[in-house]
Image (tube, rainbow, N blue to C red; front, side, top):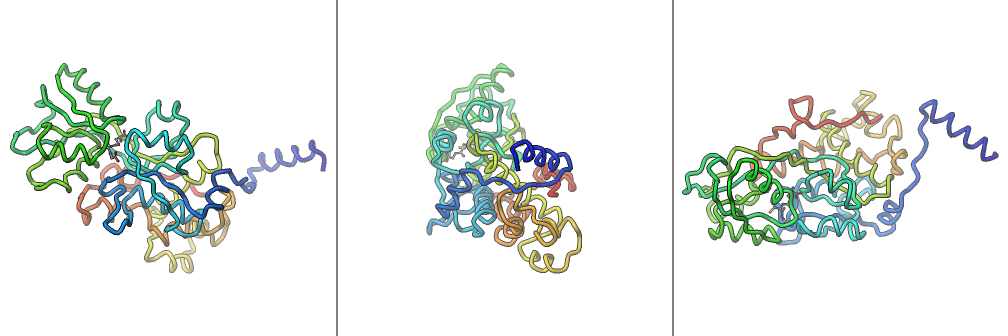
Length: 341
Ligand SMILES: N[C@@H](CCC(=O)N[C@@H](CS)C(=O)NCC(=O)O)C(=O)O
């Protein structure tokens, strides 16, 4: 076939809305050759990514890495975790040391447009808050004028406090740390009166307090912190895989598919959307450079988004966070996946 005919054929397929198989991107090839997804995670974020004494990682962000590995390598355990502090994370992704950054990172315009990385979605809607010792009897952030704040370098938290206190003509003194470990020990030792970061981080940090009850997290938030994964710029195929992994976790929940019922649903559920999602009727995976069972494996090996949330952050976890904005759109939340079709 001549080039002209080939182009015409491609244009005809596109105009008819017919799908073509995805080209493998270079990250996908590298991940397959290596047999591991290298995932950048938090050094110690309870509920998001933390390692136990045996070095086993768990958390919402860890589950996301596992879901990518289940989709791509057919095995959620094929992940290498690289713990990164706030300042290291984007440089590490940019330098090609990791394939995905899944580490409580806020999606902002400057990060998305100027760091050589691109965010793939939102896996947790958060906001910045403040934790204080109960004995200070502070119940509102408007009482923080003149306070000493512990904050981490290289975070949106650092910038938001400057905005907020400036806009409200309030003074503060910040004590800046490079790691969460350093902040929590300083705060619990009384070196600053206030610890400020994302609400979810505060809930995690509070679980590490010598006596959690001695600390309160104030109810007000001063910012939007949409947390999500990011990948290096320039590999659209890999971007699509990571983005649709997030959507698959949500779509599974919306369809009532769980780790426990997915096998039975696969053989009995006649809903065309479920059959397509699980690769029974159609192969959606090939459009991503994967196989028909990519999404089935995510559910089977990791569970749906809601299961991951409950296990890591919900009422049965030490963080005990409400689902709130992170509920599905069908249940009053903001979590929404475009159609998998
Ligand atoms: N979501 C905010 C804050 C994220 C962040 O790095 N928070 C600190 C809170 S102390 C953290 O997780 N530190 C742990 C670490 O450095 O590994 C951002 O993207 O800048």
